[in-house]
Length: 399
Image 1 (cartoon, rainbow, N blue to C red):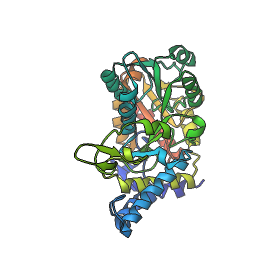
Image 2: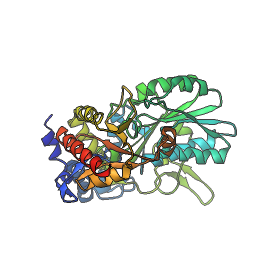
Image 3: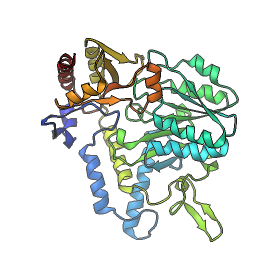
Image 4: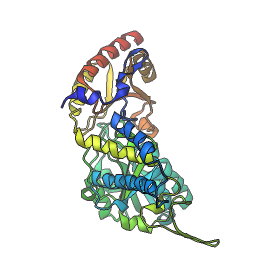
């Protein structure tokens, strides 16, 4: 792998941060975009800019084909046999809300249980809390262990006939832990429960095969995998999606409308009301092309960073799972994570600080916040060396 060849394709890396060379270590929040993705959106507006699914003229057909070809590309990327199983949303958050509302309102009742874990992002907690308030169901949690893994015995103890769906993150955005998704899914299905798998942190890093995993729903976002903002994906087994009512209604998702009633279009269009983010969807296709073209070895950068981090005085690193992706969350004794992030910012280094939209997990860890660094295809060991040097200087200043 020629890392410099890859880095040259990310124009933002030539920008400065506080007049220093940019070292971007926050890809778990959102990734940078290569010039091919940026250019694909421009190309769409320049050459395909018509409204999709609404025109028989050539320009409209070109736009529709570009949009639907990306749907096929996404299906292949996650191992689905059918593009009808792929629903485009504005974000993974909307994808989870769609399932919670469209499936949950119809299938949950008083006394039913939605089973989550305490390491979930708020976007995989709050929608379930809301739908449970409406239906009388309740949310229960599996707790994580000190090493950032899930206790599967606790899962076994929690599963019963009242658990209608298990919704959990494939990869923790705090620990970086790769949860044993297939094992959890098999246990849930044996119990008669459906499964939603949150792939926001796994789709950018792991090879996904929804058929092999056998999850009922899988959600992820383009912007965490080199793609544009404003595009999310919901994969669902077609027989389940067919039985769900639309989450939103309006133009583009109807078959027939009279003054008295309406009927819905076929999958996946019945879940895509209104004018979709066509250019952004097209850009997501370019991001998938990039990831297919440049299978990266940046996990070596992560391992290098992890070894260096453990040598930092006063550090606590959260999570120590044997299977994990390139995310490191940490605190330094008696120093606020926000202060660390602010001082590193003046060295050109982007470090996340806060609760990472995981307040229940912060409570379980008995902390208010932590700092986090995360790596992707464009990061180098040289950047790690600079980060470690500046982190140690920051600690001395704040001690």
